[in-house]
Image (cartoon, rainbow, N blue to C red; front, side, top):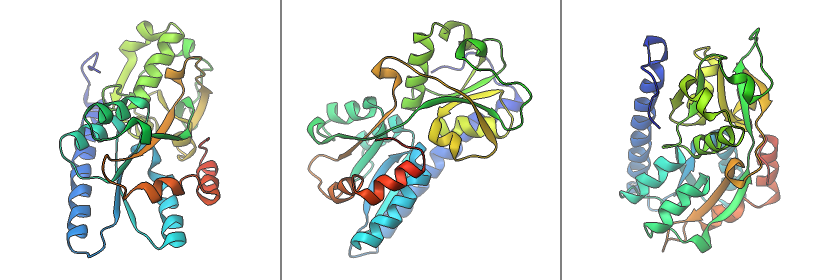
Length: 264
């Protein structure tokens, strides 16, 4: 997605966030690989959507307690994850938001469509800074309501979902000039939590994880392209991530996901 207007100093944090997250991703991969090289038993490495940071860390603890096996994560936007793996980043499996990232991996012969399974679903919401005196109740009311942070469709499936939802409700053209593109849903959430934008369009689970924002309203869509889904898959020819992916369907893992607001 292109920036539709020049960012001033107050909104330049969005650009900086992209650099910081990209740098952090590279550092995480380097650390994981370094740790792996120094260990006789390498931990399973799963590349996962940034919106799963909190819940997967909790699932990881449960998995390691229940199985004695280790798993580590590299978190990033789902489309960025696919691009990283396609260009050679090492991984055993992925958990991504939306089918676009899976399709990229399948077409690049990095994963098999047969092995990709839906593991979770989410919900689209609009949030504003906590305590904001102004609150709207529909996407139509967002037109002219100030700057809106939204995940960039080019880097995050969440952005694809929101773009589809806004087009479905015939407000995309009108609201587009107000949008500040963010690297992913978490970056958009931070923009609202810090008061740098009037609204952010994020996943419901992200909104529930931050006390500095309040949910204004849910954005309900009719088409599948507006319904957030998460898919997990091992990389082609690599079964190391299969035990962890299978663990995601256990009662203990499901209970953790539901407590964080995710749906099956």
